[in-house]
Length: 159
Image (tube, rainbow, N blue to C red; front, side, top):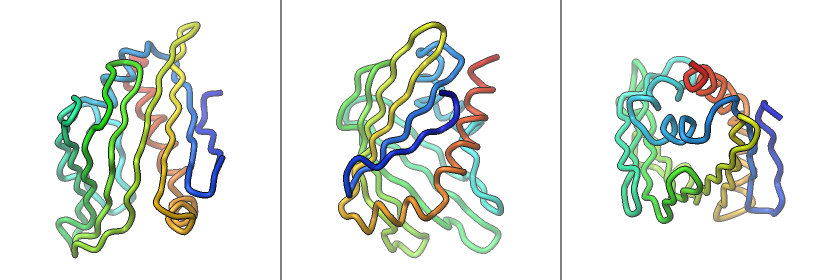
């Protein structure tokens, strides 16, 4: 498995799984370092990632913002790490809002990392407040956007 695999084990969860041809430490660092995140976290066409602030620690926060030619910010993401075991597991809250302040979705996202045979296996469990929120995320095309980002991440960590 190298491409993104998606399952929906419950009405309010999405599980995303992907493997990378790189050491777990390198994948972890790419997912928790703002400088590295800016290199693989591609915004949708017409948007720019204008803010990428990350405090990778228990109780630390993350803050991302995207802008367009017409709106700065167009959309924001804010969260806080509620679990943080370096190179193994991290859990954070996540709230996405439009630039107007309207909440798009809130969820809890858990990342788990294992390494075997020179590959890092990542499993992300997203837990939404409702089936409608989960279904909205699935319908948004997030899988294509995430896979494009993860292809860039793999290029970054494979160097």
